[in-house]
Image (cartoon, rainbow, N blue to C red; front, side, top):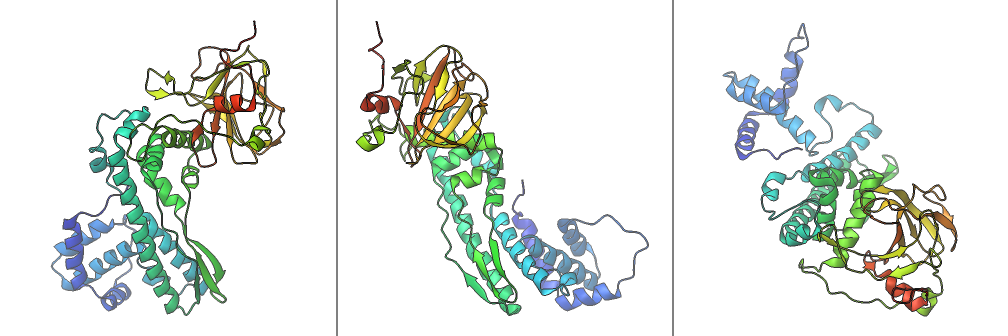
Amino acid sequence: MKRLLQPKIISLLLSALILASTASVRSAKAESPTPSATPEPLTILEQLQQACSTEEESTVACSAACAAEQLRYDEGLVSCLPEDANQPRYLRLNAMFDATNRILSHSLTFDWSGWSKTLVAFKPKEYDCYAQNQIAFSTLANTLNTALRSASALSGKVLSRDLRAENIALHTTPRQEPNLNWRECAALYSVFGEDTTQLMQEAFSVQQEGSAIRGVTIRWPNPSFADIAAHGTKEQLVEAKLALYYLNTVYQDDGSVAPVSAFQFSKEYLSTVTHPVPGGVIKNGWYDPRSHRTRVHTGTDIRMSSKTPILSMTDGVVLYVGFLPIPGNYVIIRDPSGYEYHYYHMYELSTFVKEGDVVKQGQQIGRVGSTGNSVAYHLHVGLVSPDGVYLNPYDLFTQAGIGPVQGQEPE
């Protein structure tokens, strides 16, 4: 991962820039002989060191200015190098937006080694550790949010300057202020680790609409948590969303454990759900300890025999079909009201539905199994509210009069 330049190097760059001038760069390039062989290109730092170690003032000015201009280009502060000045206008316009995105990308360099030292008693797979480090993840969120705000302001200023120089009309849309919170940063870090900033660099991309003739419109990035996580694999996206749902449910803003509370569903909504495995006894295992007491249970288990058909509890759209270590084979469906229904531990990767399918209540979506973190054949049902919090499905079943429930097993 890229690192910010050290103060010593920045001082060296500033000293070199005092000696540099654009005119000397161009004249020196024109007068320089054509080499007989192409040498290996020097890095920017090597160019600066070489320039400042030579005794010839003209060479110092040329080499240092070239290196400095390349550095400004890499950081997005200039959109074109001198050799690109004669490009067609539309290519220069594209280069301006490319430079804007380089500014955004450069702003998200981050010293993970310094930050990671602030983590205490940290075990990557234990959610409690993320909550215990709420302050560290809040600091991370504030740092990234501030960097993105500053980069957006700078990129807008640079882009406006370049467009004015080309006499291209600019139409802009309002910039949305990024506002990642500690839970979102913790959930991303739990899956992507130090690659989190790389994903954010990819997600925070300015989009261009229009042309050099008609004028251009800037579409500023405002990606959601899911948009950022989607730059990984599908499995990583689902895992990150599950982590966020858990952190949203179990922990309060200050990292303390949230109290258990019941949710009251409307009568209209209760009429839209049905039993996923008719006859199966519904167990209230909400907040039971799991994984050697490193997490709590955020769903309802229904014990049934192997390969029993699993039916969709509602109408909806299939969001994901896949496998992860804890859920095993799973299907996730979103209903018309925005609730997500999670069906875990299926016997095999479902062939009954695929992602994007529209399903009806009572339609078979899989078969009961014991895959993932499971020791017996059963169906785990998870329920996520539209605002990303786990709800207790047992409350849903009892309020809807769906059973039998635990303690009411048939004789």
